[in-house]
Image (cartoon, rainbow, N blue to C red; front, side):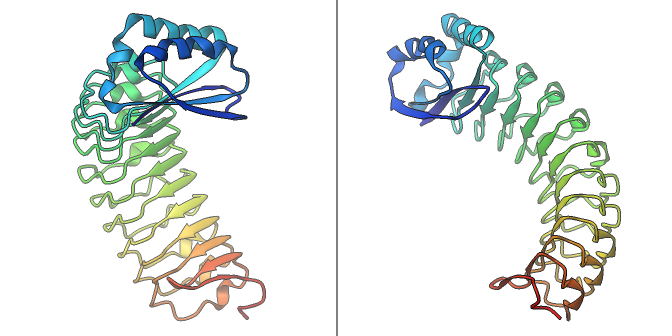
Length: 290
């Protein structure tokens, strides 16, 4: 099913759900101007895909609802395989196009606030998306130039095997680079607030990441030295099997050491608030470690 969501800037206070068919779509949108502090959730059959949004009357109504009624429109077209043209969706606030494999051109989507393009493998050029606030390009493996994404607030690039240089992403606030196996230099990412480098197996040096607030290094099996990470707030080192010394991590607030089987002692971690030390055991520290 395809979901179409319309919501006010104040977001969800009350939720109303119903199913409707094609003939009721435009009338339902017209009624939005009478909705106060409500969230309306609509579902359509996937086969209708993008035909509605090519309709001039539909676009005019959507634009009027945004401009005159301060409505923000969220549109979920996840897994609509027949969609190729998304040029009519530039004014949508939040847009989900995950697994729309036949989309190639996203140049019209530069004003979308939140954009999910997970697994849209035919996309190659994302230079027009530099002003998107939250952008998910996970699995879009044919994108090789990410230099225009340097000022994105929240960026997901899971599973990029063609990218080696991520230095231009130093100003991104929340950055996911998990399973980017060819990344080895993360020295420029020390100012990222939330950083996910899980499954980046070629990373060895994390000495520049001491100021990251939330840092996920799980399954980075070649990391051995974490002495520079003592000021990280939330640190995931699960299954980093070559780590032996965690004595510098006593000030970390949340620390995950599951699967780190070569660590011989945790005495230095007595002040850690929440500690995970095995895949089956979670301990919240008070006086348990002496």
